[in-house]
Amino acid sequence: MPTIIEKRGGAKNDVVTIGDEARDVAAARQVGVKCVAVSWGFSERAPIEREHPDVLSDDPAKLAEAIMNACPAQPFS
Image 1 (cartoon, rainbow, N blue to C red):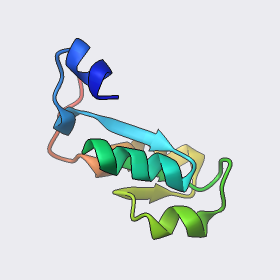
Image 2 (image 1 turned 120 degrees about the horizontal axis):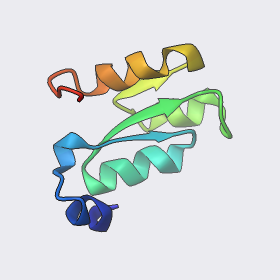
Image 3 (image 1 turned 180 degrees about the vertical axis):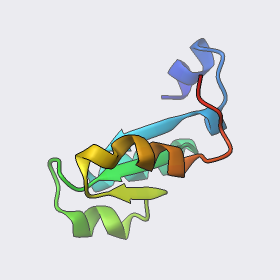
């Protein structure tokens, strides 16, 4: 992930990952980027919740809102 961010000329605070497992949240934390976790994917909610994602979404219809909540100060273009 750091290589992709660097190649794209971005900054970590501009990145939001989306994951459906606790290890996805842990990976985002390790790299230092925001993480929106979803409870409707591979894993159950409890293991994901224990990793403390920035936002945990239970509703696929509200994923865009969850992403915006993860980085409210970041404008999207």
